[in-house]
Length: 360
Image (cartoon, rainbow, N blue to C red):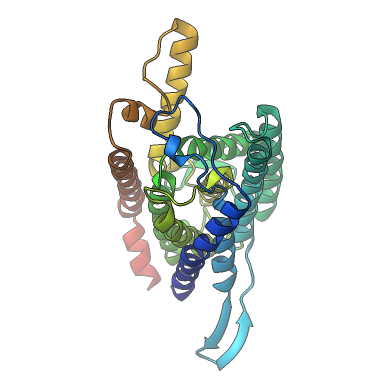
């Protein structure tokens, strides 16, 4: 529990204190956001420092690593010790940093070209494919099950198709979060809710090995995953302080891509693949509206929404940006609450309480 608290607290502290310095540095280097002309009411955001996701990535890594350092033990008293890193935590770090790197390159190209166009689709997908391929191979080697899970394994083993599933999960989640990142504080606020929920879920798995040990190998360590999720929770809250409307800084693709990569990795390793549809319900909704719009316009020449992602639709209806953001946070919270309900309900209805009592 102490490691969880220290990870979240340190990441929060680094994020909230380092972001103002990042804002000044980015302004000095003229690294600002480019706004699509068709997005009405956003012209005032042009030039706002972007690529703030670098701070989020740095804060998470510092919080995660620092949580492994101990200066006190009950047995030996004062002393310096570093707890070893487990494969599960390193896997999530790889997906987090790997997808964030692709986002960083995308952001960097936008800045150097002074246009809202970064990496091409082929280059971005190729990078995501490389990250997904390495992640899938490493996951199998580390003992991650190739079965699809909801609150835990559903018993459907994908076999070799697991590599395709990993690619789909990583790219879909990263791009879904990226699509949602279009309003001040929308992703940082909703992301904090999702990673807070994952902290609870993963710590619960760690505390009840008698119920979950068949689905999460010891070397993967649910506690390691919970510590990482807690670090992201803290980092996003710290960043939200500066990212809320009117935003002083945007996270950019480096932030949204890394967040999406971490979400997919946590779901894959903890065998909660399909539960992510509820935990990240807001991102699913935003992505589905884009898909519907594309199919409707290309197939029938008509638009279902005034503009997608759907938060722009409500802007064009005259809703204030802060109203949309807060209401979308509420939708994200409802998805998180529903997911936690399913997770705990599975534990109760399948004998988790009896197993826990027997383990005491």
